[in-house]
Image 1: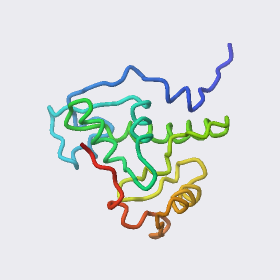
Image 2 (image 1 turned 90 degrees about the vertical axis):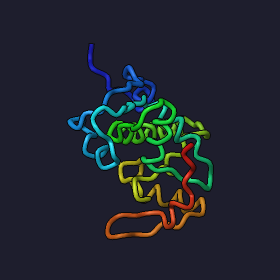
Image 3 (image 1 turned 30 degrees about the vertical axis):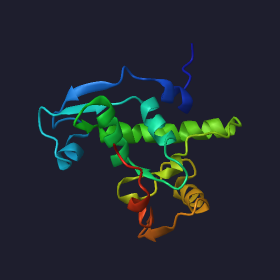
Image 4 (image 1 turned 90 degrees about the horizontal axis):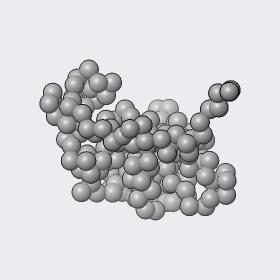
Length: 166
């Protein structure tokens, strides 16, 4: 039987036996990033499934923004851990964005507003469908001011629009 590549939507629905709560090890692929955020051996880290990342992204209303840091904060609180793996969460953000575009192509008007999810520092995500230009256009349509810093785009005063992590 020939191999069939999974669709983005199938990848989004694959929970990969997650969530997993692990004891932090600096050798984790996201170890250095978590150490910068204060993680120490013995702290707990959640690896949340893609569908949970998508749920957080769907909760961002028009006029608001979220970054990978806030998504991880929300997932850490939800699972009662000190930290969330930024590497897997970042990958799942990209999966959610591409799955949303598959939904849009199928005619679903109510898609995950992935363009409201920014990279750390308020930067736009070049890996989103259509790249930074498409994300820039959507954000500007919603009234955000997008500027350029070198080759990268960012939302001006993005922190004023971040949803709170409870």
